[in-house]
Image (cartoon, rainbow, N blue to C red):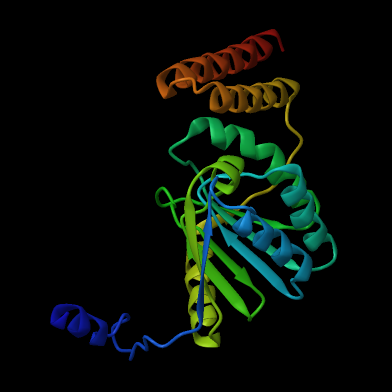
Length: 231
């Protein structure tokens, strides 16, 4: 107890006095919950945001409702920022997400690719009123199937610190510029998406998934090479 008390007295940020009194809310989610609590909270944030909605996630594969909610928020003038790693540790997800990112970009959202390393943070910032961090990604598996835990913060000072942190990550990221995909790229993205969904439901092992995905990538590169040679 004495060790825990002493550690809590230490400032969390050098040079600042850290307060352990804060308004927070624990938001659990998982298959044992009656409702998809965190998913509902993210949707609500999309519809109630007045000025800004900033999101950081390593994996971005939303369902149709969440994608539409984010697109509508961007269209009505909310500053929608999405920070994702340039390359995550899941190539299939990186391919599948591109269709969603293009659509959001066309709707006015700002997408940033974080370059230095794999970005595993999961954050949400709503205007100046709330911020949240936890284990939940913005993909269907995490939102509906996995056991996740998110902590929401409501103190203005905490929200401001989250905003500063996200700004620092954006400074190390490059803005995504949407462009129309080639027919082969679009086909590969769609096939990867179908394969990913099938693999989740049928519980296909990760090595087998990677094998089929590698075949897709190699086929895509081969077709591009043939097209160049014929041009």
